[in-house]
Length: 261
Image (cartoon, rainbow, N blue to C red; front, side, top):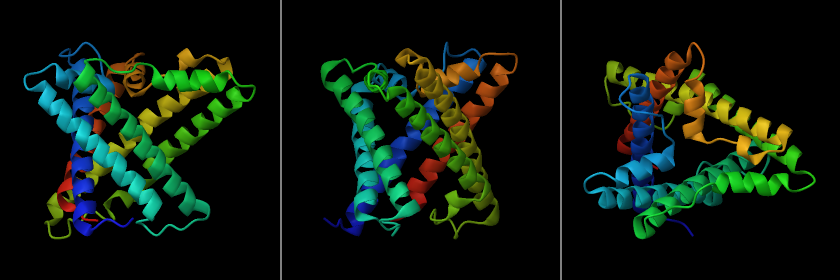
């Protein structure tokens, strides 16, 4: 099925707007933790819970759920329709698989938001359960460690994109003056670097879970941010990463506003 240009852009814009808001909130919580305005940094599920507890929270939670579903649909459409003409072999196939995996992750987050919206509760520990299921197999430790390698590779790819300015290829800000383009470019760079750090920490937790055969060792984004806070340089690391997530969220909003697919 081929979507019209209007439908594609609606999915893209809604998805990236929502993704940007979620990252802005995660980054905001991380920075707030450093300055003492929040008790802990938070991952996307905790952010969704926080949104639901505020005035008009149910309405905003519903908007976020729909936006995350739009992002899921867009990433899956990218993978199936091959919107970037990556092909069916080698690196192209890997990229398309990555888009599908990304879409699935955001789809699960959307499902969590809808579940919270309609039932007042959300599934907990789904990722840990999946890791536990893998570890129960004879080949489980190797599989979980392999996932850790993949996550680490994704983190390195984020860093590569930042250093080579790959994130600017389709943004569509050529009509803006040089100063504004530079701000957007740097926001994307800083954001991707922060994401690389978070992916690196999550990969570390996956390696621990695999080598120790213990699913409880696996931690998500929120725990990864809390992990950065430990140690003598913890506050500085968390502040830098939180600022980077704020920058990444801002860059997603720019993409939603200017990029067309």
